[in-house]
Each structure stands twice: as structure tokens, then as C-alpha cells.
Image (cartoon, rainbow, N blue to C red):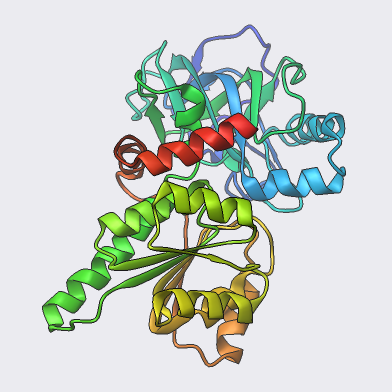
Length: 369
């Protein structure tokens, strides 16, 4: 395996086929996968099974952006400077506090002849793998970004491995809107899978109980999509839990949930009470889509025995979730939303196109940003 180091920025040739998961790009520490690495080699030349993307916009994940925003007390210049420092030091965008990154859109600049991704030069794509494992170089100093939004206009390049995932952007949608949707497309896909199984299993067993779903953070990107996906998958009653009145009003107007409840996701009793009151029973499936820590126990407490909690937030403490469930004697299955489910991009874009409430929430969020 050849390490891709010391390249001149103008080189555009191929080297031989290399690790499909990007091991050859790991600089330190040796022996780990790119996501776990402290630093990656972001040299621009590609192996025969790699692809280079000319980057036009990053989408920082919500937990990472919130941490940076709060750390710098809303100073956009300081946020921008830290993002630049992270990328230049690490060869990728991985927040050292949250461990999370985001994703990007751009244009295929060069595709190795042995790449299995099927991408062609000139195609506009969204990467469906995290920036935490994507070699990345920013070349414009983020001059067009004020540091005040999750979406980051920029110029630079990124490298995709043979085991990476990317989707060609739909020509009929605003690229910024597509990026926002595809950033969280794993959430509705896994929610739909879990809810569908509950519906199918109960029908097979002759169990007449309706399937109930709670989404904590229901007015956000992943939350609104998850509510729409749950309803399409057969959930009989859904509730979106939000922290403030403005989100309650927006989600109610979108019509994506049967009920909208106001509660601080960090208050376990308040969340449990809100969910149970809205649904009449604890939720069969609870989906956590918030970007602040400390929301594990409320999700567990508001879920029925034998139910499932899906954690999509990068702010989740998985030790806290496990120990919390044990301490509450809660018989719940807890799933980590890993961001990938086959067909997740198509499903999310389908919800955007088919659910006016989803589109309204996304476009309002982009306008506010």
C-alpha cells in the first residue's frame, strides 16, 4: 500500500489501487481507521479507486456547530478560525470535543478508473459519509462564511474512498436544501425500518395495539423527517417534543405530528410526562434528534417496556444511556443511528418532495440561517 504524502498541489495523476476504507490516508496514529485517526493525508492525487471532489459547501453537524458557537459565545470570526485550524491540522473536519463533523457537496473533479462509486467528472454530488473520515483541504480561507450557520460555503477539495458513499444531487432542487436533507437522511430511513417492523410484527401476532412514536427534537432537520417517515411506515399516533413555543408552533403548522409537546429534553420527568400525556401511553419507538447532551434519560423514561429508543444525536452519551436504562430498570432496546441505511438518500428526498410540511420547515430553517 502506498502512502499518499508530499504531493504537489498541481498533480492530477493516479497511483495504484489502495485500501478501500482509506487506511493509506491515515497519518497518525497508525493502525486505526480514518474516522478514529487524529490526522489524515489530504494530498490531492488520487489512487485508482478514489475520487476527488471540488468542494463548494460543507454542512457542519448540529452538535459540532452548537459546541463551537457556545465556546466562542457567538463570535462568528472565532468559529470560522477554529474550523480552519481543525481542517488544516487534522486533514479533515472533526470537532475535537464532539468528535463529529458533517458532510459536503461539490463537483466530481477526478474519478479513479477503478473506483466502484460510479461517479463521473462534472457531476454535482453530496457525500453521504462523515467529514470525520473524509480527507479535506480548504483553499479559500472560508472567506464567504461568517461563522454563523451550519452551512459553510467554501472552495477546496475532498477525497472519497472506495467504501465511501455519495449521491448525485437532484437537478430540480436547490443544492443547499438537498444538502440539508441528505445530511440527516439516515434518521428517517432507520425510523421507518423500526416502525415498519413494529407494525408488521403486531399485525402478524394479531396484536391490535396501535404503534406510537415520539420524536424528541421534532421540529429540527432529522426530527421532522423522522416524524414524516414514522407516519408513512404505519405509526398510528406520533408526538413531536420541542423545547420552545416557536418550534411548537412551526411543527404544529407543518402537520407532521398528531401532537406537539413542549418540554426540555434534558428534563426526564417533563419529557416522559409530555410523551405519555400526548400519546395516552408511553411511546413504542422514541427517536432522539437533539443536539445538546443530557437527553438520554427522558427518552428512556418515556418509552414503553419492550420499546425501542433510537439515538441520532452526536451529543448522546452512550454510557449515560446504558447506565440510565439499567438504573431505571427499563426494558428497552437502544439503537445507535449510524447514518447509513440502504436507500436512505432516496427516502429522505422523497419525503421532502411528498410532504409539504417537511419542505416548509427546511426552507424556513435555511432562511433563518
